[in-house]
Image (cartoon, rainbow, N blue to C red):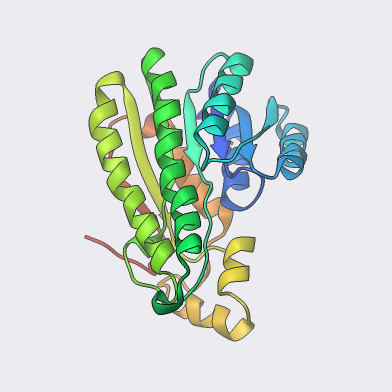
Amino acid sequence: MFGLLNGKKAMVTGGAQGIGKAVALIYAENGADVAICDLNEVLAEQTAAEITGITGQNCFAIKMDVSKKESVESGVKSIVEKMGRIDVFCNAAGILIEALLLEMREDLWDKVFAVNVKGTFLLNQAVGRVMKEQNGGKIVNISSCSAKKPTWKEAAYCASKAAIIGLVRVAALELGQYGINVNSVLPGATDTEMVRKAFLTSPEIEQEWIEKTALKRLGKPIDQARAVLFLSSELADHITGESLVVSAGEVMTQ
């Protein structure tokens, strides 16, 4: 495309499918080598091979459970050993479990927070340490428009995605002195497998969500990936601690 990341070394969690896969592809298309991290190692390996075939960039898979400190730290160490550094990191790992607030089980609440919030903390900490030693880098965390608005049956998801915004702001404040930019992208309704399983379960429901947008269409993973690419490139050198909403006008914030 534009070569915005020529020569860069990138890492993407949740990179085997959905938004994460789109980010990994657009990173590679723009000249970066990419470590694709996912709990589903087989799918991650398939995605890495696919992207290498399309772009010619060096892409490889790392099995990682972002909710486990040991898995995150060993994975980041392995990536640095293979690539030498991490210039760009996108955290796209996340889960959505729907339940009414009065019926939400504690173990399911904890599972959502373990992946979405604890995972973001562990990853930003581990990658931030690497970037500190190399004097800079770009971190982009995927939050959600659900952080800005209430959604039926999404108490855990909304709360966890709002927590990511708070974490990003503190990370940006603390890591800026080391030349590290930390931002987040907040997708609106995006056509991914996770979203279709959760609530885009019929043509009628899909149309209802489309009507909520100003542009009258659902997002695609590439829409989110383009926003991530911008925040990962030198075009965003003077931007940190921000939350970029990408929702076709479904959510508009001040």
